[in-house]
Length: 212
Image 1 (tube, rainbow, N blue to C red):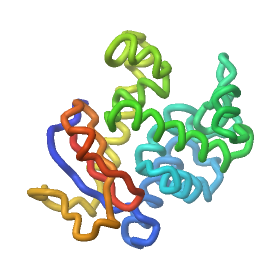
Image 2 (image 1 turned 30 degrees about the horizontal axis):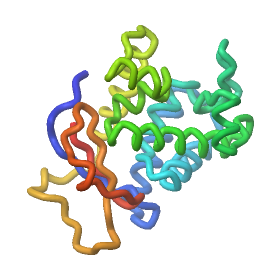
Image 3 (image 1 turned 90 degrees about the vertical axis):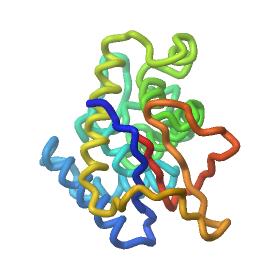
Image 4 (image 1 turned 180 degrees about the vertical axis):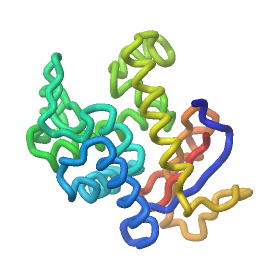
């Protein structure tokens, strides 16, 4: 599924009850579909870790689904651990315990945020970096031609697009972002292209814009 060239906005701040409820509900539904035996509070844990690290909960949930099928006991052949399949050395650099569910999610969300920042908000490149390493994305100047990585990026992107497009909170496309207060900034994600000048990009956990 190709992400469309449209601008959507969804509010996901913990203080906005409607957005928080929607995100938790959609994440919970996704978890139950994939792993009914998963911890029932996992959706809340994902939401909390995402907001803390300035990442859309729906994006983090889509990533965790593809990484571990919401199973914190998952261990890959390469040694990646837990919900977000963190490598031990990555977990150590992030200062988290990959075997602890909440800590693993916190580290996964933080690492995903770092990859988004390193790729100027480009979601697909951030996912490729999460899977194959930032160095490979930079070396190939795009998504590396590894079958595992291309399949991973496609799968996570499809899950994410499905969740976002189901949101009842998405209004009509605004002419320009409504930033009434200098204290309320935005984080802008560009899944398909680096079209936004770096100087125009703002960051905060309150509102997420998606150009798809």
